[in-house]
Length: 189
Image (cartoon, rainbow, N blue to C red; front, side, top):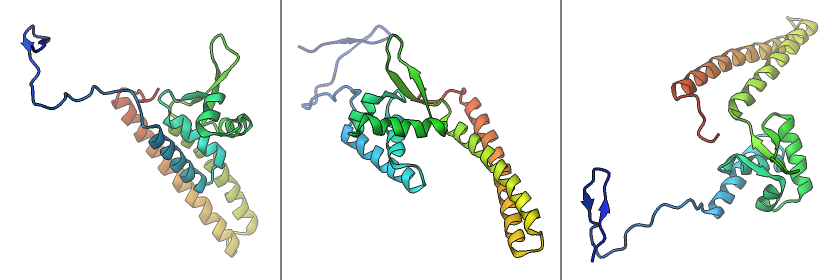
């Protein structure tokens, strides 16, 4: 006897019998070993780029979590690190505006969450740093003398940061337009 399934149009369909089992329904399970390898690999890339090692691991774990949010205990367990290591990493990540802290309702536990539009905000803050560097470099070039080798080198560095800032502004504007065209929502928040 075969089971029939009602379709949306009211007709019945019968599953085909092919001698092989029907494919398994998709599950929400992830390959935790693969996730762990990704976290460690991405953390290594962030560390190579200059981020503190433990902060990079915590950030990568948050990025790889479906909710973009984990407690200190969850991070410590997943990464096999001490709560003190989590605390130090979170301090760094909040200082550079990559992670926020929020209280779980009805609990004394904090959850650490990636900021919405994380990369946009991170690069916006970087843009502010470039502005300060450019200003300091221009003042330095004037102090060193515009015709001296050091003054010329510092002035060229200031010009580079000015160029970079202008390009970054255009990139950020195009990203915002792209997000608005997609409906403005991020996939993970």
